[in-house]
Every structure is written in structure tokens, then in C-alpha cells.
Amino acid sequence: MINVLVAGFKGSMGNKTIHMVANNDKFKLAGVYNPVVTEKNVNEVAEFADLDVPVYTDYEQIPVNDIDVWIDFTIPSAVYQNVKFALENKISVVVGTTGLKDEQIVELKEIAAKNGIGGLIAPNFGISAVLLMQFAKQAAKYMPDVEIIEMHHDNKLDAPSGTAINTAKLIAEVREEHQQGNPEETESLDGARGANYEGMHIHSVRLPGYVAHEQVLFGSKGEALTIRQDSFDRESFMTGVALAVEKIGDYNELMVGLENLL
Image 1 (spheres, rainbow, N blue to C red):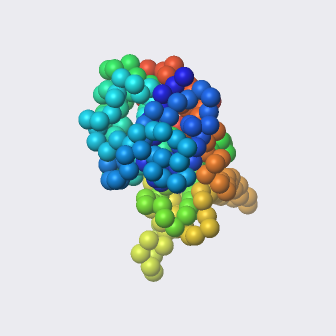
Image 2 (tube, rainbow, N blue to C red; image 1 turned 30 degrees about the vertical axis):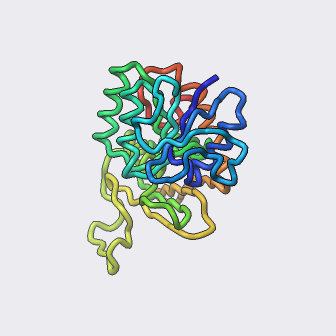
Image 3 (spheres, one colour; image 1 turned 90 degrees about the vertical axis):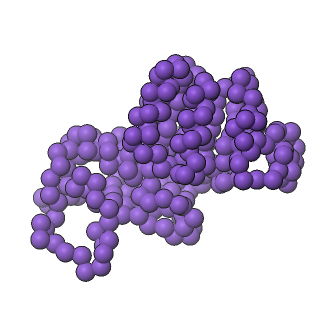
């Protein structure tokens, strides 16, 4: 039995995670963490009335020796401290929160290695998104002119999405930086060309009705290639989260990307 703590249990992904953990015979929901709630037990939330699980609002309350895996679906401003706390207390982490800076990830990797603790930071837990990123990396070897469009619900806090940034990073590994489009181009409206990552433009769409979607557009002389994935329900992410929770205890390093476990 793997004892799991869920941080960010009141968010959309945290909510789905609570249900997944509670209904998985291999996992035990040992606690939830949120520093800005009044509940003392998750059963105070009507949806979880049949669960008897403590709510922790401070790190000092958490029985670290009784937690095997910390799942984090919080907010960008909180994720770094949360993951650092877990790793320093030798708790494996499964992180779906975006917003970690490169230098923070380097530091967290050092802590995980020092303590021999496994961890996963996943820009996306959807299998289709993982495949999209891998396919895009392969395509970029042959079609280096590329732009990324990511589309999410209108309550998402950060832009571009972590998936889009990670897609660009994977592409950059095999693509030499070069000028795309007209070198003399100008924007009649600031931001019209989107963000720029090593010569690749990333465009963010935020609209109600969307969940998580991404297109990677490649262009070449006389042809084009579009790779697209769509996540229509957050439930689709739970397969990847469950896989990570089940496997992460076998590792002694912090990794980025679900593909490392597939």
C-alpha cells in the first residue's frame, strides 16, 4: 500500500486526484494539504463525505514518516516550497503544477539525488500529450520551422502552458536556432506573434469550454505538418498520475516528463 498526500485538493486536478487515490486498491489517501482552508477533514466537503482523511494546513502538522508520495496540483507560487519540503523529508513527489523555474528544478534535482528519493515533474499526465511531444521532437529534425499553439480553459493561471514550454524545449534539443519568417516583420499589435522560445513562437489561447489542447505546426517548402492532441476531460490525466505514483518509489532521482516512466 502506497500512502499518498494530495496538495491542492480543492482544485480541479486535485479533486480528480482525490477520487483516483481513494478508489485505487494500491493507494491509501493519508492526508491532504492546503494552507488556506478551514476544513480539518476532507469529509467536511460534501463530495468527500465518506472519506476520513485529515487536512493539513502547515508543514509542521504533516507526519512525514507516514507519507510515501506527495502529489502536487497547487499553484505556481507554492509548488517550489512544497516539493522542496517533500524531498527534504524523503517523500517522493509527483508534480503536475507548472511554474517551476529551470534553476529551481536544478536545485530540487540535487536534493532528490542527495536523499536518494524519486520524483517526477510532468508538464502533462495525458498519454496523448506525451506522444505529441515525442512526435514533435522527431519531426523537428526534418522540419525546423515550427510554431506552437496551446489552448486551455479560461481559469488557467499561467501562459504559456508547461506542456507548450516542454514541447519547445524538446524540439530545441534537435533544432538549431534560426530565424523564422520575415526578418523585417513588425507587430502592429504588441504580442501578435506570441512568445519567442529560441526562434519558435508559442501562442496561448484561453477560452471557456476548453480543457487542454495543443497544436504543433511545422512548415516547409510546399508542405506542412500539424500534430495535435486534445484532452476533453481531466479524468484522462489520472491514468498517468496513477502510473507515476505506483512507479516513482523505484527511482532515486527527480525526472521531468512522464515519458521517463513509460
